[in-house]
Length: 173
Image 1 (cartoon, rainbow, N blue to C red):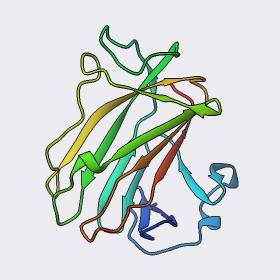
Image 2 (image 1 turned 90 degrees about the vertical axis):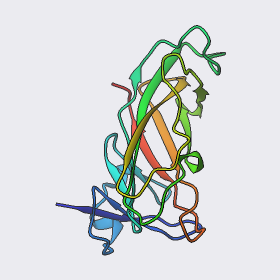
Image 3 (image 1 turned 180 degrees about the vertical axis):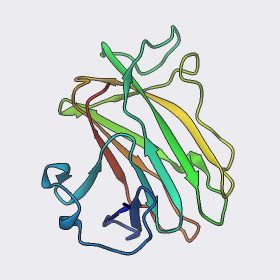
Image 4 (image 1 turned 135 degrees about the vertical axis):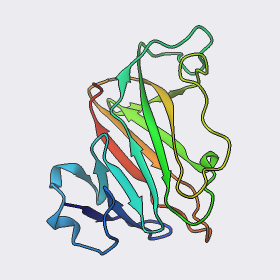
């Protein structure tokens, strides 16, 4: 069964979870209130959000990791997690993954993005063509691995409308 959610934001983009059909349903009928924060939809790790134009985003459950010797952004943290970000371009136009931004909080404070090409590799810098899927690793220093929220902003669509932010929340594995 497909699940459909509608997020509000700058562009008012319709978002479907797990490949929904694109028709709208009342959020209250599909979401447990414990998974909603002030009207924002919060997804479980591994759930896929698909925008009305076909762009789909997935964030995997974070797992602990040890940063490499030359990692940047590790200062002040002793807990580190990594997760996969997957973009499936179901639109009719190339998607620039450099437009996609992640942010995170943990234990009530901002998490610090870790830049670690030795262990995590690098994010893609080439356009994702229609029909292609690309996955890359992102790392963060976190205060509490049992309490992580990841905010993903996909940037602008082909009509220069802002995609609505999507949130994933839960503990690291």
